[in-house]
Length: 454
Ligand code: NAP
Image (cartoon, rainbow, N blue to C red; front, side, top):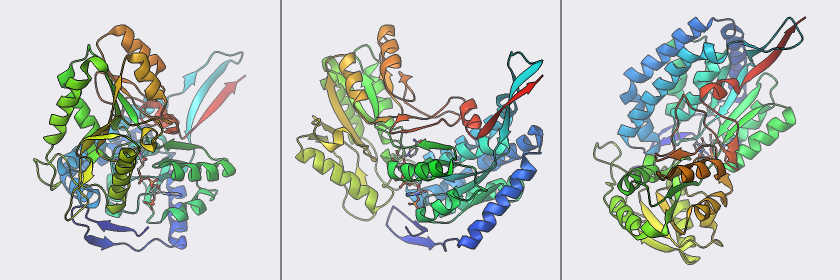
């Protein structure tokens, strides 16, 4: 895949980038290892000072970063600015909390003193997707650097300006030279880096094939991995819920980031007693969404990332309809310049249809009528994925049942699934393994050393 900035609004190629040579990659790995040897000796206070500075830069220049994000992948400018500010939050969170997360933990044993000690492991390769081009990276980078690790970023080929801007943030924040390096390379160059002894671990956020490839190479090399892959999150609405709120939040949950979010609610499982009412309200909400220039304040939905992304979703919808699903509204490409796609709803998706099982990475709601919570949970769990889930009910017994039985990395009750630096984030089943954010996110790439003093 060419490394370039292509504006999804009109398909125009804005800038092409020369891929880094193997020699340049080797230099970057060397610099990353040297920086790790410096950073691991820094006090938490010094690391925190630099990380707070990174937070300040993200906050102050949120609009500049927002413009690059919107230009490269089409998300609305207002959501891009919010993304930069959320990155400042994760920097501040780890600046303030890393020392506590990594404090020695005393354990009673037969020894006079024994404890867990968290130590950094070295350079970590991060393979990242374009959909949240700053957030996905920063939620790895902030805990990694605060732990004393260093980061090598292989970002998606369509967001090189975002990737370079992130490297620049850490440089300006005062981290040692090489602590965070961007590698402008294609996916095919990743294996060589994973097999390099100086690189100690890898994290990948993206698709299943990419995750499986990175994990299998790291398996051969005996290196730890964290995988954050796709999702087809259920959004269950029961009769006791605040229906108006569920519809309003559900619309956002499905269409946020132009529908291209791993934790977007994708399958809506609605109780039969309220199905017609909920469906009518969703139709109204979807048809009211303003599609247009992502830079405009009033725009809710910008273009999809590129032609491939739009073609894939269009084909998935058409195939589902051929298989027997019904189009309720929208869910079709918009003619003209750019990669616009009308948000839409389909229902009655047969179990035999691919759409029942796969992820639809665009603003298409799959709507199901269920007779009770048991059936909703059964359908929710039929997915090969297990990332997030959202359940709308005020009944305590139903809440408890959903929390215990839904197979997912997260269950949000009466709100949408979202990521938060204070809470662990990750999936099960084909959504991946390992956790980011919170204490788990910083422990992920640490050596949990057992210390025992006789
Ligand atoms: P993708 O094609 O897998 O790309 C993700 C990254 O992997 C890119 O940097 C890509 O580089 C690289 N890559 C692709 N194939 C590779 C390979 N064989 N070896 C090494 N690297 C490889 O994913 P995407 O389509 O851009 O992103 C959408 C997917 O990410 C969706 O499934 C979404 O649900 C998932 N996602 C998950 C989370 C989560 O937290 N669980 C968050 C966001 C997105 P190139 O760009 O150069 O191909």
